[in-house]
Image 1 (cartoon, rainbow, N blue to C red):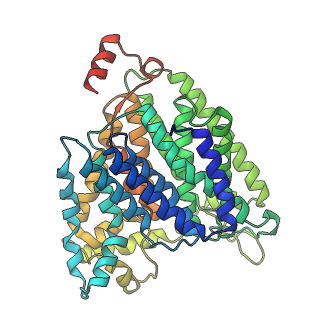
Image 2 (image 1 turned 180 degrees about the vertical axis):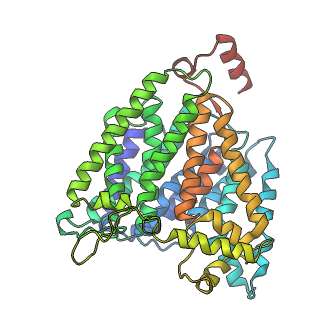
Image 3 (image 1 turned 60 degrees about the vertical axis):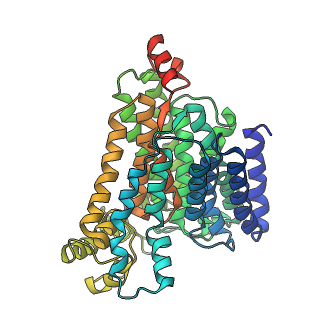
Length: 464
């Protein structure tokens, strides 16, 4: 069956309406999607990329399944995406697989055996919950490294992620009370997040924003249609702002900005000024939308992003200046305690999952939200090596290759690193997107995006 993007988008918008009224269907949706893509991967031996299309779809669907309380295990997204990509690599005929990346997973294994309790149940939980994100990240790097994508391939992958995200937007509109009935403060808002964790909802919405912004700024053909793309982008920003969780919207904005800079200073980058114009137009529209949502929330949205606190009883400002501890929602204390643990257990760390148990002894009660310092606290020097590898790969993709590779790869990896700062690796999105940044990009729109000689284009096409 031919893939019709507009039809599939409208179908998923309708699915969002159905799910908002029949949440029990979420279990069948999640399990059905996994088996559908698994069967397609086996039937085609992954020749057309059903493994990564399926993984991308699960990435976009993960938080919606959690919101709708699907009867699937919590880490379904990570394990399903990993299973699809592993199956794809096993059945396809591909050479030069980068198995060397497995060494990065082995760096994190010693910390598993530092726990005092080594029963099977806890061992399984630590692997899936604490190390599942890193395992998926490395597997994704192995899957995508050396694989060649055209811009059209990336657009298809973006669509598969955006389908379930569009369902989430509809779900949020239908499951959110009237805004006039909601009391807004300067904390993350569960009521506008479908009753689920605003951080995870905002992060997934931010992913959708980023994919549409990449397509818009690079002046690529519409993912669905010009009007549908713009409407979906505005809806994603609107719902992302209403969650009052800053990570998703800020992550998309920061990632697209640094990716844009990488593109702007690359050689042979065409249409610089047109892209500059689009960048500022997008920024202006976002600012107007921010002001509109802020007026709907009684200026609370501005206070939230400015890191200001409001007394919930009097609704008056408790502070008039920026406070890092307040703005980070306690993450600075988590970072401090993680670093103290690392200094106390410098070489091997305290062990996987142990930092959350020891943190009260260091004067603070909260679970880890920042992946870089968690790696240091729980894995010691081996965690530092893993972190340096992430930074090296990100910088490498931002400073080398064609302009379009710089923008897309650097943007995706920057979003992953930013997300790790506020949401660790709770979502499968972080591991999948980092691996996606490893792709070798073949620009099928070279005539519009790059100033390349016909000989260079022919040479690139032959190599691809």
